[in-house]
Image 1 (cartoon, rainbow, N blue to C red):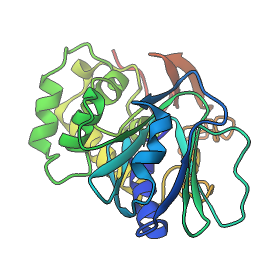
Image 2: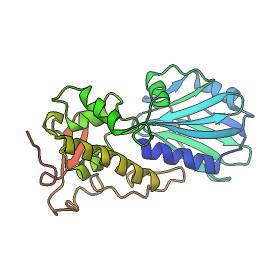
Image 3: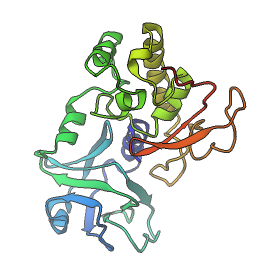
Length: 276
């Protein structure tokens, strides 16, 4: 899933590899996906984008947006995987969108679980997009200690650490994937209630949010995700499906995986005790 480190990585690589390229054609889904949502008629994307050149790409939380000349935009989010195909490279048989460029290269969009792709002309009235576009992420200068502490005061005291970090878009671009390492390095159990955290622990959580997200972005995303070239990210996760059987890197204890709030959480019960 695309979270802040991956959106930043996608935007950087798109700017590196497709800037200035001109769209030759846009192909609609070769295999429609029940949980891939499009803005408007996907069959109209070709007439909108054909002949337009790429001006830039930007990251907005969990969204990546490509800007084309003439005030046209295409963004994607969540579980959309995007790969750059070189000239002559065959696309997969099943894809949700393909943008071919005049130099023979192409972008191919696929969805495994769910995701959204939106082509628009500057007016995309989607509440999640608008909030990610207008808001600040934990890596922005405006995400200060004061801003963070106000967020802690805006939720109910019995809110869990996971719910605080990953719901209601309080931390744009931070989701169930990135929060695992953030909580581990902060020494906080995913189910621990905010009311049990001291000010020192809260500030430690803020420091972990900024440090870990920053490292993930600097290293090209997490090793559980792939980038524009199909390569895994350079950040080695310590709490993920990749490490569940490896043991805790600090104490050597068993890493626990369990379902919580609609997704899996990974934690070390010794290093991240559930304080009540």
